[in-house]
Image (cartoon, rainbow, N blue to C red; front, top):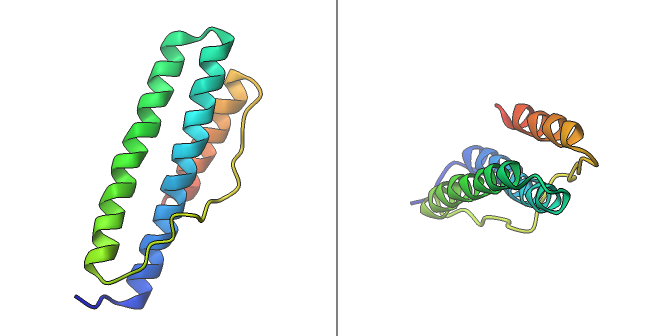
Length: 99
């Protein structure tokens, strides 16, 4: 099905945000584990996996609309150097991803 180019472009922007979140959350989870915050690392890694599910749904929709998803596009990662910075950076990423 040929989709509207504006819609496909919007879906690509949302996909880029999801892919960025996957990477940022995953790295944060690994850092948290390294710092000894096992429970927090597990929760953060789960968030990364949830973002993968969101990305998968976007991919399906884009392909259905005959779009060409760009999986290599990311927004800049903002990696926190402590737990507080990680929370702030992850929240900022989520808020920026809102339409």
